[in-house]
Length: 97
Image (cartoon, rainbow, N blue to C red; front, side, top):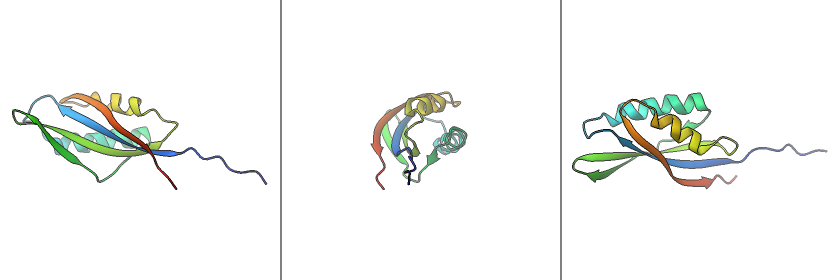
């Protein structure tokens, strides 16, 4: 009997830098979730807000997606969200199980 091949899942953490300190990080999170849903990824409840400098805070979000999808593609999509200066993958791990 043949085995069914399944793509592995991976956890990726994307660090999102807003354009300026007054940007609503909750709004960016909401739009990042919509982007992830359209991309076929799942936004997990592992938000981290990291102080950067002069009141600017970065938002780190963790996603679960198929290994066949490009993590850089997702970060590029997120970086195109309004009021986002940049988005980069800062951690990537294969999900076990």
